[in-house]
Amino acid sequence: MPRAKFTELLDEVAQNSKFFQELTPDQETHSNNYNGCESVDPRHKLAAALRWMAGGSHLDIRLVHGMSKSMMYKCLWHTVDAVNDSKKFALYIPWEDEKGLQDLELGFATLSEGLFRGCLMSIDGFCAQIQAPTGVLNVQDFWNRKGIYAYVVQANVSASGKFIGASFKATGSTHDSLALKMSRLWEKLCLISSRV
Image 1: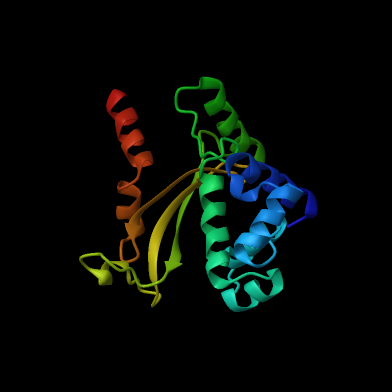
Image 2: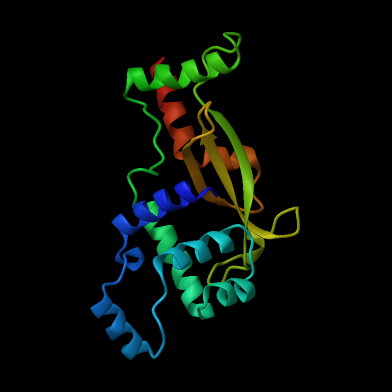
């Protein structure tokens, strides 16, 4: 990730979570005394979370960023919550905005040099690997044909590759077609087609 993009992301998560805000010298001293160690710089907090999301092991991440395993996971979930709370990163399909829909369609028309008209988004599914879930009725529902526990994610992107929608409702053993039918996108498409 380029440094400018990292800084932009750090600024955004800091607006949505005090966890990523810079500590004042006074707060840092209190933090040092209370925890018995130095506080973790917000840049390291975000970098640790991003590295874990990219497939890194907690063993190397915590050593590189100087944090405990529990702190590394705390960084991860604070990052997820801050991104989910961000208006800038909100997934949005402009169903009620005629101009917004025209812009989506124009993106695909431009990409195909006018040959592909009427397309608003590209849709695909992928498996997001998870650890074996606990506290569920049937763990095997999460086991998929690739030999991993997972959720099936149905993602929608614009012609520029920007995510505009996603559904995380289906367990790993769910077929893509059923996962799509479980999404709000499917509900919206059915509602629109019933009006026509």
